[in-house]
Length: 103
Image 1 (cartoon, rainbow, N blue to C red):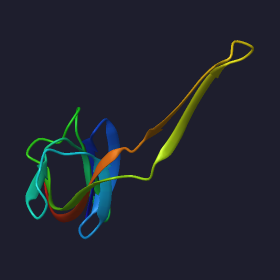
Image 2 (image 1 turned 135 degrees about the vertical axis):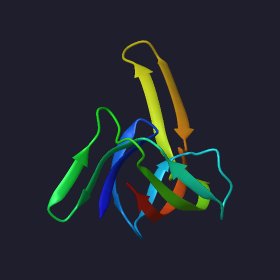
Image 3 (image 1 turned 30 degrees about the horizontal axis):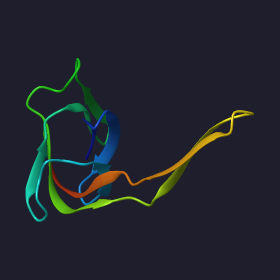
Image 4 (image 1 turned 120 degrees about the vertical axis):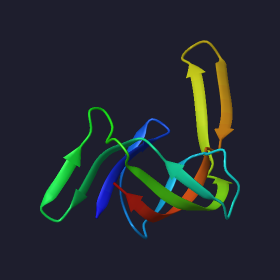
């Protein structure tokens, strides 16, 4: 069984046991989190699509950890003006293991 969920403005196709990295959630490590926005739920041979979400469907997951991704360098400059700026950024994320799909 699989499901398509929406979180952080992105869509993820998940199955039980999958470990996904999503945009930072407001949840502590080792707690459970429920994704209510389920776009589709599928089993072998049949798929239920929502309009826009599947009624009564949810996906539960265990929050493994919160962290920050690798550092990226952001460099901006204006040609021939002598203006430049170098910044770094680390995107926060939440690591979630999918434990149950209802629907």
